[in-house]
Length: 393
Image (cartoon, rainbow, N blue to C red; front, side):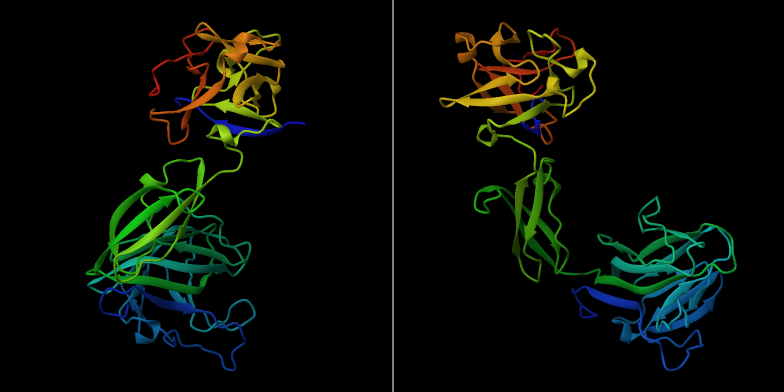
């Protein structure tokens, strides 16, 4: 039994300076406390103060940096009791309606909020909340219920970051708690370093390309999109960014099931040949190679009409239709099919040519048969048609 794979083809901080600082807002204590905490201002990492239009919490030096504020237009509460245990140093919110409410994190002057990490929980599965992260327009998944949910955000670069919360229904018992809540801030005048991103093949030694990017000291690895544009690879990085110029190694590995070179083929497997216009296919009793467009077929990896084998024989590779049990060969501008190994088949070996089209990041190669380039054209019959000298199409 041949194994089906997919083949993409054709035209297809210290608190001053440049160091990042994690500022703790909430820090859950998992064991029951020996004494109850009842005062809303009794908090290890800062104090609450009621203000017009909402309640503000301001961090102290114990949090990691004094002066970071969290302001909400729904009341901030100090959760002394939660889920049958005392959760000390925890921030909670108590909106009694089902309106959207904002929670705004603000860094002191001279600093930027670059990210945060939140673990959230509701008092009841029946009192659900949605949480919309800073910079997003749609709520994150999952909804917050009586099970812990984590919301992390990186890549921010403003003095403030606003999170939106919303209860599913109006209820005076709506309590949303953040047992774990930390904010990352960075000096707005952070020093810059040059980061060289080097892209390697999976062997880790063959260099493909490199890009130099200026970033802040101790910032997160941010691989330039130009190095990861090819969607048929998985990417992994090695290295971190410190306080001096550095190199980050990016290694790409071909995704499982994709073939982009002749040496990747196996005589015991079959393949789908696809591009943005359609998938190569044959009809019942076909004499030519066509596509799903003209044959009015939906793509199906298991449909033998859309399966081809690349048969290696005496150093050459030949195209074979699994559905029809026939070899393809160059016949004018089309690819015809024959069950016999003829001289025309022998003169029609398969090679690959690199695509130069706008789709090359997802469709990197062109199938060449007998030295002729073939692609899918919706304006030809059959629509798998010769495209000589047009790698850009």
